[in-house]
Length: 520
Image (cartoon, rainbow, N blue to C red; front, side, top):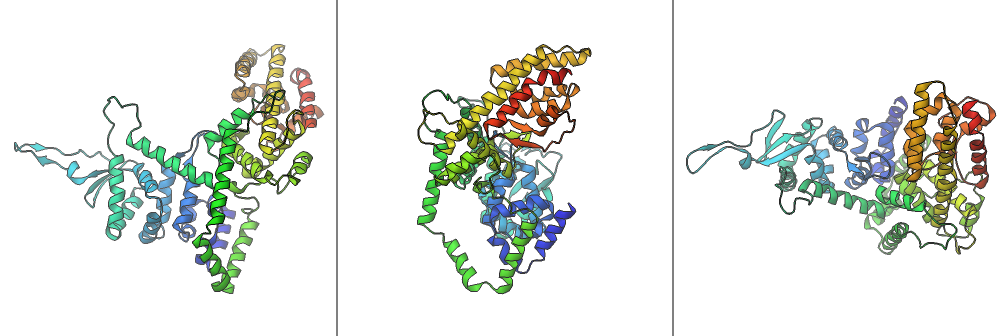
């Protein structure tokens, strides 16, 4: 964190920073926030435009439990953003909030507070003269503001929310009431069951609409939705390589069509904002401002925040490691390769994991190139024109069939012949074997990854190698070489993506020696 604090201090001392920050790409801003921590970046984010913050929030406040599952709005992260914005004062925070998508603001606030009309929450006297009690407030935090009763659902950002709403109610009353009415609608209790009780309630429908709008915006910038990525990867590992070439993936086709449409629209209608910014750069930027821009980018490059492209711009061909001769030769004669490789990389990033964690952008780019190279090397002779989407599907199928499934089936056979004197270990080995048989049957043997730990008691390098091979995205762990050389050292970061036939041959050699490694 000390290095992160130093990075932030260098950025904040840049001359004309208030003019420089609005020029930065939102992805770059997000990287600074990730590197330095949102809590410390209040002064920095206060200089960003609402448009930039909207893009950053699209990436920052949505979370997924695991790759391939739908992302959901993280209310605690949203509350932290409000708290950080308030560090620069209610006026600054309100200006940023008003510039954001109002539906996002309503949805985020509704995860923290319940809002009721004051009249509906107050006691009243009936026509018969009886006193009817109003809404009974819970024991938590409650505030009355602008004709509404606000109750805390979460307390972490309560002070920031009340303070900013108080300011907005005074300075932007129309906006305040729009937000409050939206929160009132989402604060209703559960709907009584009727003939339509299977439909989404207001809160669930609101989140569905919000997520759909976000997904559409991000698709236009080149991102792949997790659910679509997972569906494409699942489809890609079931190719019949001895049959006719299947139709191009409908998921990939729709993605590339959307990207082409967005690029065409952008080219046909230049943004007035872009023209204004370019004119400002050309005619009005002072020398100190130009020096400041250069200084900021120098600092970011030194910190490693500009060494890879933002996720939506992954090209995968900017740094090709050795062993990728097929994809290098293909890319030289196919202009569409960069867009196809970008789609594959983004799909891996959104829908897959490695070593039980999400891919980094660099890893996803390298992985995409490796698997496409493997697919081109194994390209079916009866298939016609090559493209990298199909090449990835071929490579993904090869990895699944000849590495993941083969390793799992081989381990099943080996475990069947092992007899261990330790009863507890033997029971765990038998349980691992049964789990492997079951999940090999459903073609997802990586589901037993947590149970592979029992192999550690037999041979640690073999465990690390098998853990890397029996995976949704198989890789060659350095422990595979170590086990064959008699080394016991295991480095968790020492792995390589499988990009060529010779690597699969080395996997087969390791699996052939597995009985002696586990019983020796």
